[in-house]
Image (cartoon, rainbow, N blue to C red; front, side, top):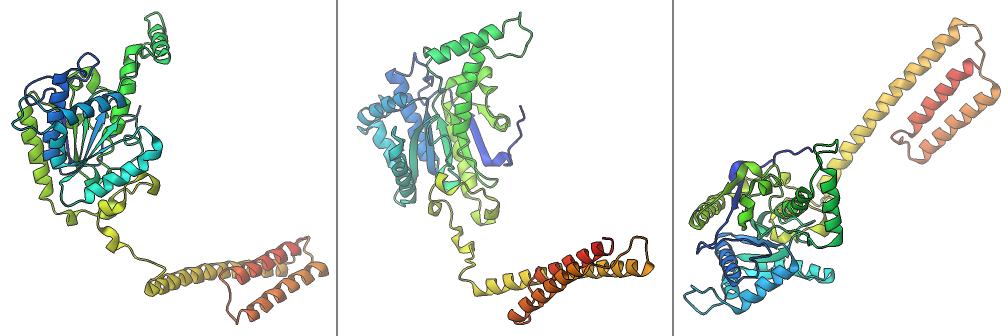
Length: 398
């Protein structure tokens, strides 16, 4: 398959794999560990710290709705065992960013998007945090450019249920096709296909952040399995040069803080807003939260000066086309007259019926010109003249 690098430079993106949390506990969202209290506490504390570091919008993607609901329920009622106060993990998140949760019902999704946009505009907070699911509406089809999404956190690989009959039969079929006895040595095995499907959903989710060549953001993989080579091989090609696997959580906090501190110092006026990619109107966040470029828009309907310039330019173009047609007409007429004088064999005069038709067309054209106040249209008269000459030309050889 064809994969190309991104248009952004190295200083516009931060990509890191975070295998452990602040207390050194591994971050692993597999079925065996994601239900444990220790994992939920560690993941919640990690998100609290990133919500403090990342400016504006933060996206957090879970492998499934059930895992997202269980983690949020725990965070709302419990705190980390090493916390210095009685605040829950959820309350600590809300101190830095206002939360929004992706709904299961598609009918409630537009309200969630509007809520997220409103919280981003709230000056009393440092942004908003959107809890979503891989393969959900947030991960596929929405642009979170600029302030709408400065970082995305992936909490794990969204593997399909292995006991699902469709998944099980697909894996068995691919394993049979990939046997050494078959002629196709590059056939995918069932396990490779299983990992590939989950990796595609992750790549879709992380692609929500960098939306144009002046955008910048961070991609944070909070699962130790992203260190494994078979997982990294499935990541998007444009991400691979920037991926760094950290062994210490403190190093993650330091480098990520430095990245956003350096980007905030950049003057946004130096960026060319004309090069940004604008998504379809029905698949983007409200534009008022993304930029203040409305002053650069010129209303052609209300701007009379612009109308005059456009009209003058259009008339010049039409006159040029008219002149070219007139030159062609003169050349054709000259050729016809020359052939008429040479007395070529088979030359005949135009029949009276055809001449009368031509004369009627010319008279009709002159009448139209008189009704228009003596002004010729762009191509109408010239086109009729050209047609008459062509008919005359063929008439001589009739």
